[in-house]
Length: 230
Image (tube, rainbow, N blue to C red; front, top):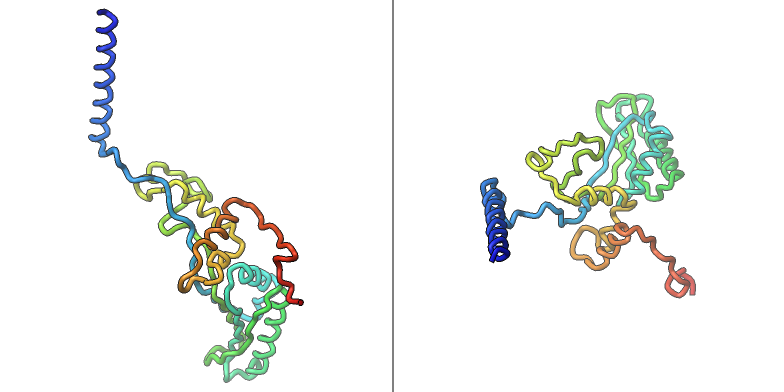
């Protein structure tokens, strides 16, 4: 009888503690079915446009090397080089502008950019200073929309109170952001169909999985590759 009484008392005490815990959660506004704090979305790819105007004299070897590196990674169209000149200029007219456009195109070609379209463009009132316009279409990879990085990453201040109130953070967002930065050619994630129209979802997921797992592609065998010869 004594053992049964003690056992019954423990059961009732346990039930009481559980009831108090549930009541406390309800008073704090927490339920049994709170929304998940885990991010279920994957990184996104976006198309855009790069464009920059600067004096021709400022387009030196350092600038062109950086521009070429950016283009080779994100560019998905021809790289247009237009030299702007003033039609009323006495010294730097259309002929000089054309020579500069061809020169810049040659320097970009030496940096590995093979699809350069060079040209000139008259701009009234510009003066004697020649200016270069560089432009091309881009595809970039980013973390999912509205998905920030965890406080403390990228030299941001760790504010764990604001992390859940001011700007809610979902677990896994930083992982997607890091993967997006590591993709060498974001346009590859769009597959052959690109960002316009329907495309092969299975192929896209397989391409993404290579970046996610870090496993390199195996080289093609002779029978699987096309060399262009009979």
